[in-house]
Length: 294
Image 1: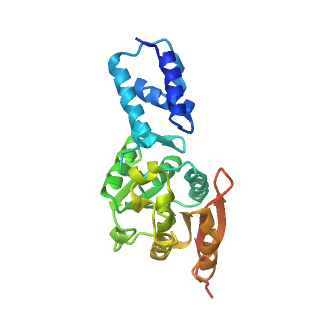
Image 2 (image 1 turned 180 degrees about the horizontal axis):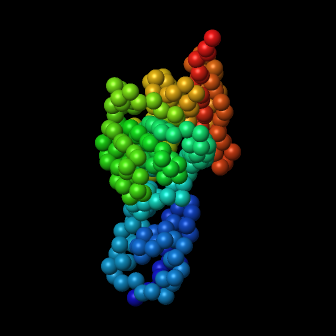
Image 3 (image 1 turned 120 degrees about the horizontal axis):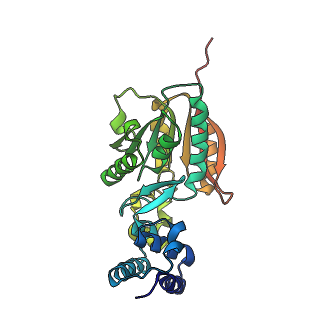
């Protein structure tokens, strides 16, 4: 029977030949999944024999990867803001770039918590729940409402909230944006959203992994990609407290259009763009103006 070290070497070579972009990293993640350990501890198993059952499981994962199945679905787990989230096929996969603006939202909420109690936010289009749950985990006392049109996404969000110990402070609803929240008299201090924003004409140019395995409705939003962005803003305004913030992800190319439209809205103020770790504008922060008195 081969030992892990030998399997590692062969796995990296196979992934490289299969034109996987990060063969060494993916080999480590696949072996960690196989060995039920963390990626950083794989080397501790270097001299452990792998039996036929484990080799068969690894071969199955490798064949799925070569067929275009995203790594996150194969592993069944993915990290977001240093937290482990369960992944399931058919639910949108969170991207690393999203962490950039969620980190900023967490900072805002932690500062707000120093001067205000009973803070509440809404995660619109929650998917696997990474945005709202991360905020709940890193901001003690924060209350989170999450909505998604996908029943499967809502169920997965609940699983992740339970897994990370914040289920007592989060509520998830299957809903077309804010529809399920109407009549609940809820006001949020912030509304966070990573909505679909890919223009419909660009769908065919996306990678095979995305087109064949991720839900199209979580990615594509009309001719210009802004159909759902506008709905989140317009339908979310009545749910946002005066002075509250929108954190909304979008394509870097859409920032000028968003800035211009927001500046024409007397109820909103465009605060700032947020760049991702590659220096591209990945999100915008908007503020609901407070009514002038006197």
